[in-house]
Image (cartoon, rainbow, N blue to C red; front, side):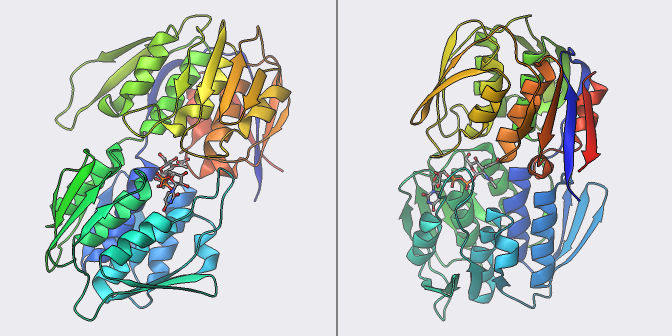
Length: 427
Ligand code: EPU
């Protein structure tokens, strides 16, 4: 069933909000459950369409997946298939992350080759080159990639990534846990999701060191044990609520977020004139409450997206929404994906003044945005339209919000609890 949002703008957001578990941390962790014949326990798993897609894929492969609220039990003892079909992979590119674990445990995996997606071509060449370096043979046929391990299993190797791809780092680190000998991943991505995955693998008995730096070392082991973990809070959802407070001149307390994961976002909203202050104790896992108080008008400030710890590409669209109403002109450079400016034309329909020059957007702050019918195109672009609508005069209608449901748990409920007026309707 298709839904749309109707948003009445110009309401200051005030109050407290709970942040859900991280989608992008949960997805590779879910794929890693395939590494061992155990029943795994994952807590704080967000209830999102993408997580449901990964769960369906695991079920298709033979896992028994049961959910009780935010806890997933995954019984990965009896695997019956080693293939992810087109039907599943076309829904979500992260499905390809099951390939390596299948090859590591069963000697073979086959997944439909993902196509491009709205934000760019997004090839998986680095994943495949890495698997080859571990000794696998790769065959591309009928739209599928078929990967077979040598008779004696995968063998550790030195892998130098051409770029610090998040997915390739996760995929190869996971796969190498069961390869013979030592694997070193150079130019590895340093995102917090990599560190979280490494800790989960270590908890299963893997020998991984260096996650969070650009060199990760994995000593292969024979078997891995049970996975038990609680997914950490979503840093992009956190950043999106910071942006929601910022664009409405609000005062919001984010409960239990990871400050370390948000440094660049916190710094930039600070430059833009917001006050961001940690509140209370920091928990043993590094979480604490964060209060954001925004001024009536934000100051324009430039960003360039970059791999972690730089400004996240997943926050670029939300930042741009904030800059459309700032005083002054800001330059926004997108350096990770080649086509991640689809929110620009929709924001302009709401009165934003933006010029595009390749991967650079020049945003001239305007006095006000006005509500309009707009179309969501991908997850974070959709979030930016919601933000713009919260601040715009009048009503905004956002179509195709299934994009939002892939990555934000109960977005309208959380926003409405802060004083926004967001209505979900069937179309
Ligand atoms: N790339 C290649 N070849 C590869 C892999 C990547 O050319 O084999 C390119 C991509 O096309 C892209 C760049 O490298 O231009 C970076 O891609 P990366 O592999 O780092 O991204 P990803 O693993 O596919 C994850 C998140 C994205 C997030 C990016 C960057 C998940 C499930 N997805 O994607 O999240 O934007 O890292 O931080 O973790 C989102 O949540 O909205 C989202 C798109």
